[in-house]
Image 1 (tube, protein in one colour):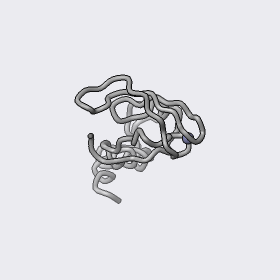
Image 2: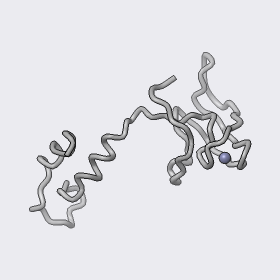
Image 3: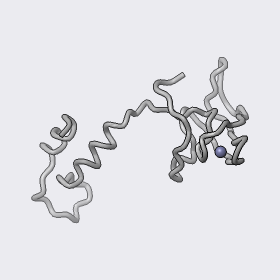
Image 4: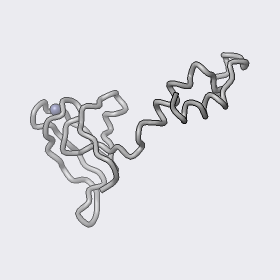
Amino acid sequence: MSKIESIIEFECTDEKPSDCDWTLRKKDVSEIAEAQSSPADKYHRKETCNNCGSLNEIKWVDGEDGIMHEGETKCTCCGFSDYWAHGFFASMQDGYDKCEKYQGYR
Ligand SMILES: [Zn+2]
């Protein structure tokens, strides 16, 4: 068990009724720990398609000093259109996760 799991488990109890969805329960510990242990600073590389991992064409929408903040992307391989903003593809909310990741903001 990782440290984060033991901390969460310490705060959890199985005594509370299961219909309280705001209540931490022990059976949720592994799920919470997994979510917390995945680094928050794993950004999506906008040059790679979130549908197939191939190379994207990028259309600059917003940014400054040579750093793009938002842009439209289109895959040169599968034609997948996406919207990249501040490190993340909009398509992640639809479950797409094939793009390359990088640590830290740039
Ligand atoms: Zn693609």
